[in-house]
Image: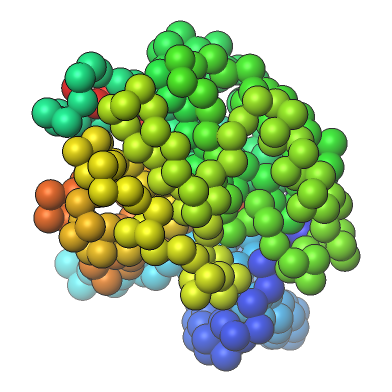
Length: 374
């Protein structure tokens, strides 16, 4: 990650007002909180004032871009400091004096470092998550390996994919699904080709299938790092097909006269209206089979359940990635991570192999998913 990338990643103009409001609140808090801290270390009032003004301005400027690494770290430092202050006040009420460890700021720094270290580790710890599903619609059992949100060679060490290829092959999956966002706007052409070459080395009984994510295929103006996307969509398609991977884009495939896989076109970038309805992708004879919907984003579950689909698999959410995003999603009643039920249909939402934007993760693990249909 470059120095500029640290401050500029993911600028969203529509979040500017919210970001500034948050930044102003944090800046005001920092201005007065640092006054007590600098006073403890006997820094002169003049230097203290200059430092506090500079820091407050820095916080407000960073808050213009609420998704940058700098802003998120500032928000975490603010949150830790608030919590420590609350306990500091409680301690003073009980003991009648301020705690020294609270006054000198060491506790805030230590807790902040621990959170950042845990978050960096979280992005580099890949777990296997298993789900077991029982059905009477199939004549035999199947194992599906699901990998999504790789965002290859952007914020995660690309060697982690290579290190896990052998582990995933040892599962001996019957079907492999690549659930989208394997590459993104920050992935070079060489890295994109490398990612699909590695994934093409995965072995399965009935093949590897790919559905688009909102970052795999998008207009050039979305690329804030390179100015233009480093590879064309035609080059992306050619690379996927050259590695023996089947693209499902509002299309279906039947496997062993048991399973029907329906791959959805991604709904990103205003694409919702042009998507074909799942009902129009099914044949009447398909309803006796086990129907699996592959959609990068967890969408249209109620409709798909009513149609008669049995399982939907999605990614996209990253399981929140950074606290408290996932918690907020769950509170809103939206699928975020794990197993959900929609009538007779189940949905599995993966937190993904990596994350996006900031090189930290502290909410739900990086993973590849193994689904056992029995």
